[in-house]
Amino acid sequence: MKTEEEIERVSCLIIGSGPAGYTAAIYAARADLKPVVYTGMVPGGQLTQTTEVDNFPGYPQGITGPVMMEDLRAQAERFGTSVRFGYATKVDFSRDGGIHKVEIDGVKHIEAETVIIATGATAKWLGLDSEQKYNGFGVSACAVCDGFFFKGQDVAIVGAGDTAAEEATYLAKLARKVYMLVRRDEFRASKAMVHRVMNTENIEVLYNTEAEEILGDGQVVTGLRVKNNQTEAVSHIDITGFFVAIGHKPNTELFQGVLDMDETGYLITKADSTATNIPGVFACGDVQDHVFRQAITAAGTGCMSALEAERYLMAKQDIV
Image 1 (cartoon, rainbow, N blue to C red):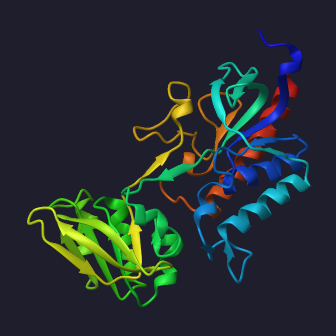
Image 2 (tube, rainbow, N blue to C red; image 1 turned 180 degrees about the vertical axis):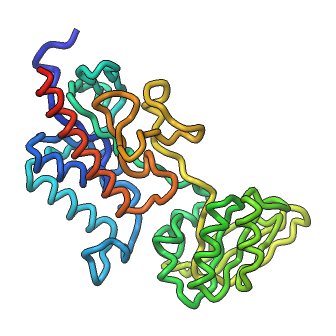
Image 3 (cartoon, one colour; image 1 turned 180 degrees about the horizontal axis):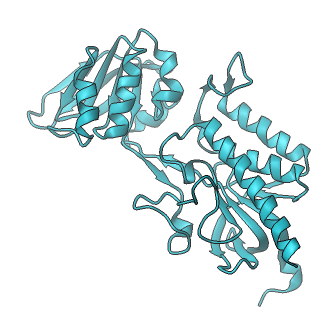
């Protein structure tokens, strides 16, 4: 049985960092909720694996992902946020608006009046060693984020769903040539998206084709070795950018059976809100957004979750 000293009680607990978690912390701290942030195993989230961020407002010369996350963290701490390294290992959410219990690192126990979930999502990768070697140096899992850096160049994208088709057509507006690798002999994307791809002149679709190795000079991507999985023929493509669009996996395993989520694991929030199906528990950022997945939209929902947490606590006080 846990003693009083072993249990920490807080008004607002934020699980996860990144643009959503840190923005939630900034707003919650300014509302005097004295938020506690547990960063997760990757403090700063996916952006810490991004080299240049050029599309976040306020940085006219661009900024690196890690530096940007340190700026957001410092801003949150400036207003009194307690930022701690650690991750949630168990949750016990009250369904009647009571106190929520969260276990941290399997040993520490926190009781929170409100919980903001900002655990994000993880891009699915092919599993190539070279994929991680050149991640941020020609390899990307976000065409909208990084396509700008490949203007007038030749790039490749792997994937066959709607997201891959959409990102391929986006890249085609910037790149000179887009090679689209489709593992089977057909797309999984909708007919409308396939039609868009097939009617874009500078997209070349390579069916039954898989990436074998991303080639580079030790610093940046210079090419791609591919294999036709029907003929076993191996060929080489000269590219400077390689985009992976085979989906994302929301980091929601901890909340399965507790919070409502869709068939792919994204948390479901109420319309025009970040509120989950549990009173006092809110979700923001990529953990509940499978459409936009941008730093700026994550930050926006982080703001929303903090404002909603503040209003939730004020309403509880009025009732008392």
